[in-house]
Length: 447
Image 1 (cartoon, rainbow, N blue to C red):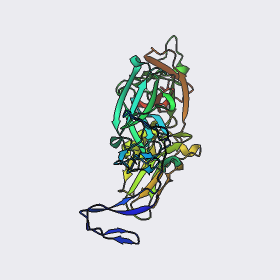
Image 2 (tube, one colour):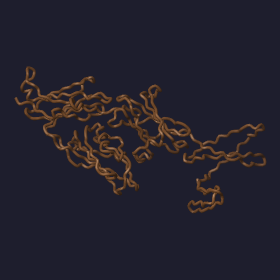
Image 3 (cartoon, helix red, strand yellow):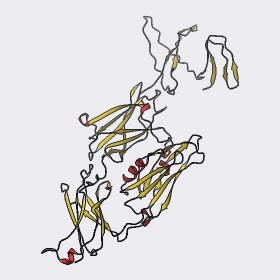
Image 4 (cartoon, one colour):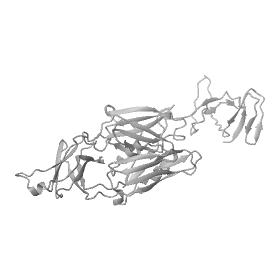
């Protein structure tokens, strides 16, 4: 296709590259003119009674941003040749669009009733010649999306923008995001999506994975009576030696398993605290102009969902604690965009003892600034953590799902030596935040 200056009622010069044409008619505009033209001669369609004739023109393709469509005109011919054509008629060929090429679904950190859908926009030629105006999302508890088990919503294409850049995971398409809320934790849901335009709703595409079970790690223990420790009293069933070398740990199951049965409890005990590990996540920007985009973090093989470059300290903390491999951290954000720094203090893990670090997932961490530069992120080890003095741990299986009260006897302790104790509960998604005992420490009695 070539470009031309089109004169239509005007005196304003039409400037296009090296062309400069003035038109002496009412109004002038710049435009494009398709140089491709097809002529079709249809024989043996003579009608003496005024019957309408039809002819189908196949294989027409036109980008959705060209709104006028194709022009068609017809000339009648006889042995003397073709006459003057009729006035042209314009029509835009289009059809229902194809679905998004990328449809990802994930749990929402710290929200057991929600899932998040990441999906790409649909543009030409996948929009089938008509701009996509919205999306239809369906979710169901049955794989065949039986009407009685299915729900749906229609979204305006302008209302679902995402912090992900087109370069995310090297996809090369605009991303969108939508939260599906008020789901039942622990119940499997199937999700699919279709795009829609002026021609209708296109075919559906399943999410990847095709189903997901919303939920979260177990909720926190009751703050007042969650975990207690007490000494054993020597009596007819407990010897003096057992009493002076043991402590009883008692706890009440968390109020909610958040959709997955509690499988184990982790009891940790130690003599004295140690230094908590601190790692900093830092944006590296050269230009100093504002940064946009999203990033993903990983720790010991588990990966967060996308985080906005403007994520608060709380958002980063929740994302990290949602990982199977991290139970509790404290995050502090300092600086302003593009000089953000998130300082992560590990409260229940000791990364340096195993050589672990938070890492940046490069393909899923794409940033850009106002001048087109692509800043990056790095992670620095600020303070090396160490295991507490005298640290020990034991995993206690959950005996039955309905059980509420638990206790466990710690043995082979030192009489007169105070011990600190904490307990964590786990389900299929990992161990939740640990809960410190009351009292905060206790020693087996000296007898």
